[in-house]
Length: 155
Image (cartoon, rainbow, N blue to C red; front, side, top):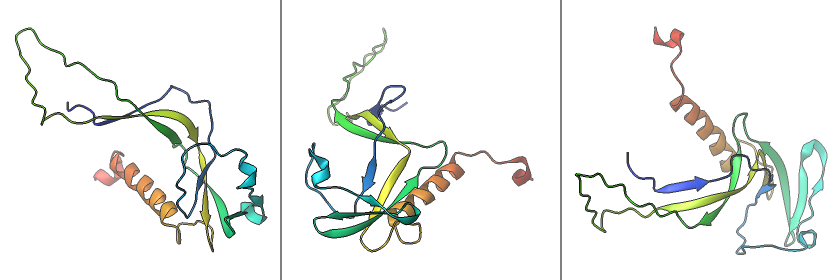
């Protein structure tokens, strides 16, 4: 079996729940923003539609639940574990530096079952928002790939 190129380590049950927002903009800042109410204060309207203003731009948000059996994970980059290769008694392993793959590692920090999709003029639905549409299509595609054919379809 080939060595893994990317690993995501997390505790068995992440107790911390994250509130995830997908904004239609880029924010070049990593880290805490305290107090957040100064910059972000969404108000709830009708049909679970939220309205917020970010730098004077009006945004409309709609919550999107992940399908049953799925969850999202908030991860943080961490240093990969270095593994020493196993050596058999009679076999000598020689690895060239060009053949070695770089590995990456992430550490799970929080989980979520719902995310808020924000848009400028409209709310996120599968007909207009590419993120919602791709999430629905990829989940359906993955279920088809990993499913077993039923007896009725095999005939």
